Image (cartoon, rainbow, N blue to C red; front, side, top):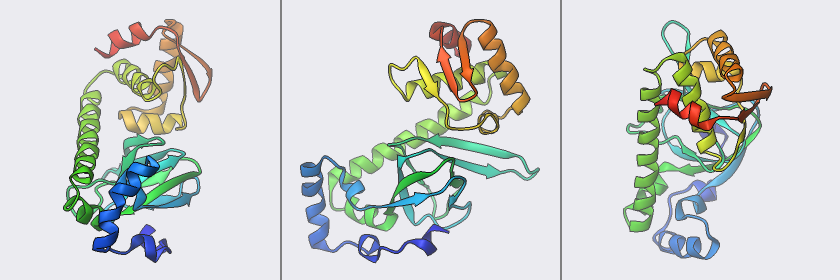
Length: 230
């Protein structure tokens, strides 16, 4: 568990009043947000757990490199993936005191780890930090809402919506590299891996996409994908 492996007591301790006042100034000089300056980078190997479901939500996280998935194992043993977090994304935001999902690295990655209590304490003193925290929370809520809406659509609509979602996170790109496996995609969309593979083949046959490799997708007709996802 992460809270047992953190070894940087300086970065993890509660901020003093002097430190709290200096963080926004340092942020404006360095281009980093005040919240990021409070974190410590940590590496995680492929498939390594970052935190587990129901563990105390003591930290916030930001992906520096690599990709992270959050997931929950359902009562019948099926896995439901909550979201895929790419470089720049913040995860681990919780309403309560414990994590509702588990998080693990899809591939080797580096994650900025920030003590939650430090962020809350700083947000109480600095309006800019409070605004950043609110924006991160609103972004996470919007992701949850979008995912719920995606799960009520047909298989073709779900796959098309997923491809458009990934493309939107790489603005201007006509090709997308998928760091996750077909099984990951299936568990995110609430489909079987066979249905995902079959639907991708159907989209390729209709000239909406091309699939040069299992991880690379070329968007040949974005308008057609958009109509499918409407």
